[in-house]
Length: 146
Image (tube, rainbow, N blue to C red):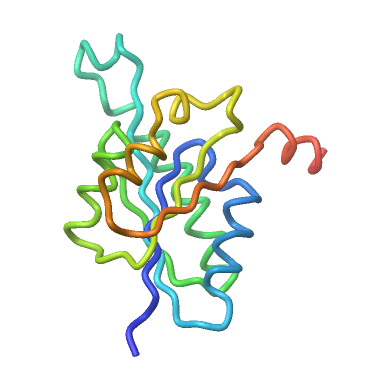
């Protein structure tokens, strides 16, 4: 039987407790394979000057921590850096990774550029794969740890 394939798109929230808990539950009791895509987000000024290296470096750092945490929980996971537009990052990833479901992780509504840009709605309209939206509150995570 083939593994259940989960495509995750997250940036700053990639190592958030809510996302890791959600993926742990999705992978429980089944053979699951996870691809975590972190879009290389850039400021307009850096984009204007074609300075994408810094955005990629930051995304790679966050991604490495997430993959390590998932593997520590026994979830087979790998990561990739994606296009700065999360919907385009999903589209690109689906060419290589035939996902059974997609998880989009964002900040809470008051802090989320992705929700402001209707990323979840755009993805649901574009792809015929079930999509789950997970909200990660890094501020609450930080307070819990300290």
